[in-house]
Amino acid sequence: MLDQLNRPLTQTATRAEVEDLLFEEAACLDEWRLDDWLKLLTDDATYEIPSTDRSQAEGGQSLPLILDDNRWLRERVKQLLGGYTWVEQPRSRTRRLVGNVRVLGVEGEDIHVQANFVIHRLRSDTTAVYVGHYENVLRRCHGVLKIHRRRSVLDNESLKAHGAIAFIL
Amino acid sequence: MVKGSTVHPIRRDDERGIFAVHRSVYTDPEIQAREQERIFDRCWLYAAHVSELKAPGDFIARKIANRRIFLVRGKDGAVRAFFNACTHKGAMICRENKGSAKLFSCPYHAWTFDTSGTLMGVPDSESFGPNFEREEFNLNPVPRCDISHGFIFVSFASDGESLPEHLGPAAECLSLLEDNGSEGMQVADGSFKYSIAANWKLLLENSNDAYHVPATHRRYLDYLKEQGGGWANPGEGPRTTVTPLGKGHCVFRLHDQTSKMTGNWGGSMPESLRPGMEARRAALEARHGKERADLMCDTFAILQIFPNLLILESVSTIIRQFFPNGVGSLDVNSWALMPSDLDEDDRAYALRSVAAFWGPGGFGSADDVDILESCQMAFTNREAEWSLVSRGMLADRPPRFDDDLAAREFWKRWGEIVAPEPDSKSNLVPFAARGA
Image 1 (cartoon, rainbow over the protein chains, first blue to last red):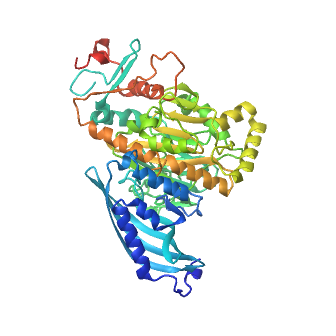
Image 2: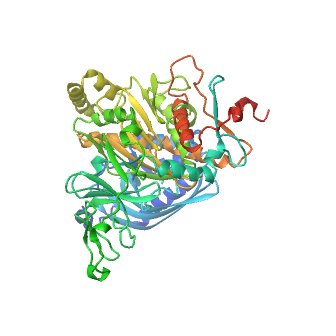
């Protein structure tokens, strides 16, 4: 697949354009503007976090931490904004640094993007650090760059310091 | 028994329907030390599932009750458990969490062992002198390792009850689980590894408690209601039966369920899964008869095996195990268990459904983590002493899944082992009398 991705980059997206999207996304999530965040996604966007085991099994064939289709993704946001998601009630503070943004290549209408993240979550006098990278697929909808597939791959070997993944990672 | 007093940590008055636990059981390091010594150093503990060790040479390294052990299937097909420590200087010889090997070579001085633990190679062994006997330095086996219906258990005590004696009728529940797959059951790749800043017993109580579901998991039940399912209040919900199995084990069953990977197509399952699901059910009926097939396909069982194993069925099945990590913290390991003949689409659906609720990223367990941590935080309020475990004790009806029966079964066994009854009953002050 990487061979395909290594084809010369088309004009589909520049790194600056991708960075603008990812940085705006980070701001939406840290500021709990989750409805705004949804607007950065395609209507059929999916959200995935594989298990910290780093299983080599093909997609969907190993136990995921999160594997939201679009319906579940929107339900997740709705619940996070509702009053009964105790793990975010009161809400945590998060701060995320997104960097090392790379446009890997283009496949049809899919723009493959990788970026590293470090996210601190602070709540109840404890701090948990989530480290990893995004493997995102972006698409252009009516000229606007949006996130079509969002995959957050953790470097953390377990969630022993975290307990849960309560917010959008 | 409670530190600094003569009060027994469990108060029980069957006539008045009172069962209460002193909160020092969640905070007292002395009680924790006694649990380690009397429960975790002695009891049979779940270690792995046979499907994780398919072929000779397959191994997995696990941390069980603060020990580093590894399990390996030998050339002879037998599963063995060893302490993961070289018999020479103690370095860990199994450095990957799982894999396959013909030999285990210690990275420190290259002592080499085969899959049955036999010491095969010692560089320059002559220098250890004429009295060095290689066979005295085979790997140290975990004192006991036994398998019940595909579930591998270990015990760090060389004596004590056998695994069948420990499990009793719970073994039949494991047998039923094993039969869920016409071609056996399979633990899927990937696991949940997370910790909760709470005493381990809080997760035990939480995992078998349906009373908390309408409140703690309201957001999930609201979602199910929108999909045409779910329930809103305690006492509602599916028809259930609760069966104590002795020795702290218990099973409760939610009947008349409408979607289960074992062979019950329904609920919001896509049409594409239907043929496979119906074929699996037909195969189970042919093999085990209708009654047993119905039990496997139409009920969700929540099986509690003392001290720290829960096997939780819903659309799919999760094996949840946890160990104390200090008195105020616990480590969870969970795996998805499913029939091994599921095709790719079925397996993907099963894995998604496990993650949706039971995982640390799911719509359910994440809130449990938060609530249990809040309990533990609040246990610093030492003046607020007792927790109540009495639901359903005097109820004039069969036990329900939102009663505390499973938790009481656990606490009774825990009490027998960790805090035997005091000689005099004079300590058993009725719960209502506290602070009055």
